[in-house]
Image (cartoon, rainbow, N blue to C red; front, side):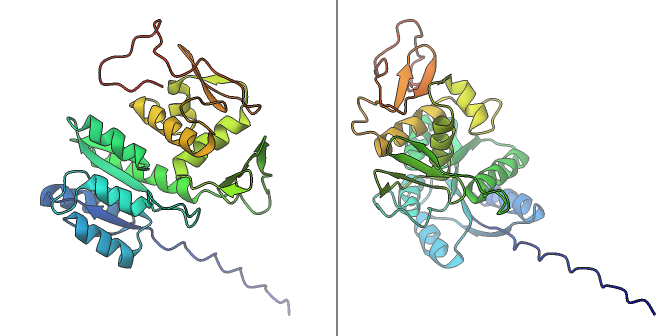
Length: 272
């Protein structure tokens, strides 16, 4: 009698990702949580900033959808505390944050990005777009290459980026980077000496075909603050005015952060 080998058990399904929605408008909250639940996420909703911090400590979300205009404690301060803006600890990585902003809140949106928010969606927004943005942020935050194909560290001078661990150090000192900051640094380190326009970086690093270029500007500024000896006179991520940014592993000099007379910037838009 032949013996039949039983089929291998399928791998266990990954547990659903938990998302905390922080929104004081009940209609918006209901729509957002409804779409996220149908997309397979476990969601919880709170309506003010203090409740967001309390619930995040217990719920331990994989991502927070955060409205900027909140009662009690505004969204910027919630973002600051969630991301540990004043902490120097390199691990664990802070929880990803996707901000919800109104069209007239551009300065707050930029400040939110400077505090480490990973993405933003402007009201009124498409719930489907929000779900797609959330999926993109989560994939980048949790990305890891297969164990069978290890990816070696990328080194440039005293900088080392480890793609598998999503961890970077400079001169032996761990760098506390957000998911987007790490992606941006790794991309630039893998392409030394090449000039990338902000549109190119938005497509290559963020995966967006279009979007607010100030997103790139803010992330470059934050990354410089963490890897440059003097962020005001960067030598690693240098500005090539009228063209974009270039990573110089030798620590050369760029054109400097000065106005570019050939490319006037519209009022209210941050320069590279």
